[in-house]
Length: 537
Ligand SMILES: [Zn+2]
Image (cartoon, rainbow, N blue to C red):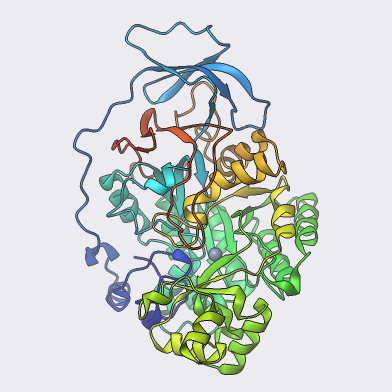
């Protein structure tokens, strides 16, 4: 059960804003919340099918590879022995004596890295019928975290049990979402600040989510469900997550004109609640704030000097994707003036690309100016018409490459996709390969070691995962083995699902899930709970 991030149930039933999963039976879900019944009573997902034969992790010796261990340490030629799902030994080439029965894999010329951990992923409900998660493992993702932007599964224990029953290729963890608990406490009456009683109700739901293994508390303050919450409400709820050792991940109040105020609010919530802050998909969202990246980073660094643990993630593209309502000022998508102001702030209709328009799918992928021309309407009229016709998603080509590259080079910023299985924006299939291939190899903006680190040990550390994200003896054998000369994203804004290239072999808990350009069919992934959570729960 996912609360739609645009917050409008009627619209959400037809649109998938920002690639987030959602449950179409929102009203049924609402009734269940009101009745105190578990969401799973909806039985929405098809019955999971477990892989026929689950391969047991065997002993494998990888020889001749170039180990980039995820910590940022320099690459080194080394052999890696895995067994029982964990890394048994890493040693100089030829130094490891393989026990009898060990499979030998020659990985000469290839990089051996930890599997990537995607801390902001929207595969949530899309894996039920696509448990191979092909576009994810093709770029080396071995763990993904859902429930970002304030929109999470709930109850979390039931979602995680269903993930375990499904057995996807990748490991899956989640946040508990602010919008989700807000819906639970306020239902359709969410377009106002919450009362003290409602905040107390939300706090209980956050606590329940954290006790069930959520990695932290997420918010989506640009979406209708979060728009009217006060800073005090967020502090109160973030405190609950802090008590359970979680962090606060936020899609901030504003990524455009009021970007810096939104950064200040996120930092203030962290300081007041005593919780680590993680800024989701950090960006300078339109021309009014181009060049603001250094100032955003300066404020984050200043907060760190004051003692606040603050980090951010980023998808490596100069275009965002969201629900159509995001382009209207104050989210007033039916108001022509708000829409006109939003189009202007984006830099004009040529920078807005319509996607997920179910009413007329032939228009998907076209820019707003082109659709307006074909329909003989103004761009504003076109937006109003699309909204009345069921709504759509929008990709905004409104960021500057310079800001993307400034954030890319900060040690505080890690890689995340903000996409997932079957999402339209190319980031869902390309993010991790693109950081390696485009930004590290081709542009030389960061080293191979740093490009790997910002997708492995850095998110692991943010999440408190101590046995994943680095290649070291004893760690779980989640591994991405790729061709450093060939790794690259292939997904585009016109063809968002094309898998990345150059990933040769991917392992999850010591089982190979990707080989020779396709999934092996093995599905060793499992639900991950925040370390310290009662696993018997
Ligand atoms: Zn977001």
